[in-house]
Image (cartoon, rainbow, N blue to C red; front, side):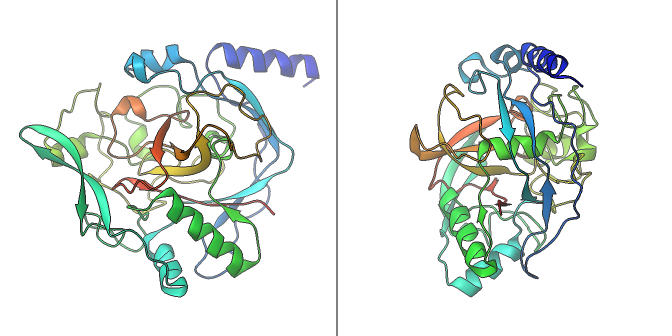
Length: 319
């Protein structure tokens, strides 16, 4: 493909709210740097178009005041590849960190419950990554952890292995999530039952468990088998072999929060250090959010110390 055609495709993608042009596929096999370490998937160098339009978000059902945070659509280029964890960090992996390092994780967590006919979020003492308010096994994603907890885990992993681990920045996360695709979801464009083959989304099982609205404006019209979190790698991976990049849990990134991508770096290896640095951007959506907030370009702000029942993280290795 010549340069003129490549530029034309980039322009066309941006015009329609698409967000990737890289067709490269990982060539190296997944690896682990230690028995307790996450399995890492090497990702290729390449370029993609990051973000989506406010019009596309509003069309999907997002309230207008919440739309527009993923604009402007812009090209991001990774001059070299990096490795991304195949799954979010699990309960067992986080326990290994806490046990070995003596780290003290938060002992309270914000959870959702129904009160007087309405769903509210409250911070409940006694809830934690070990007991988030619903059953979890060792192979489930750790939740009730803050962005700071994720950064502490990555620092411990770096020291333990001698390699450069970090919580991914937004560019790294979206690049991995899209995996060379250009659609709203890495499995396609339509909000249909196919979602339940690839991810743990807000679905009919969750609506039943919570006695919550079940219409298509709130839930995917399918059953994924779980009302809350699900084991990691339980569903089909995206084209690059990454699991749970959409749904299951919100995942922390390392970028300071900004309301838009104005002046965002085009070098994918750079973490954004301007804006509201008390807050971080979260990516991927979760089992618990409304269906219109679950797609590959979704981003949401939370304070770096926020601890929530559907918040966790994964790591990248950049050396």
